[in-house]
Image 1 (cartoon, rainbow, N blue to C red):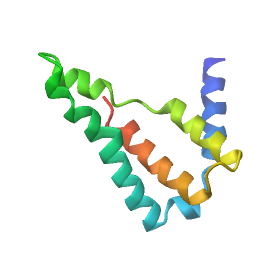
Image 2 (cartoon, rainbow, N blue to C red):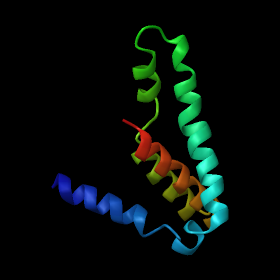
Image 3 (cartoon, rainbow, N blue to C red):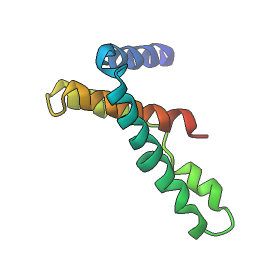
Length: 101
């Protein structure tokens, strides 16, 4: 049953992504900027102040973003964000998901 929950979760979020907006250059560069800046660099750059395990702590703060995908999908479904903003958020979360250890 855990595999069915994962498949259902992935399909729920994946089918909500507007592909034409997601593959636009505007969504890509804005999502890249948000993904690399706020999602990754802010957490890793605060690591030097954390002591001996600084880089482990810094990279551990870069979240996996599974729950954030669901929150973004729910916000899009409730018309709280438009399709362009949703696409930017998806790109940013992809960076956090891919680069997180």
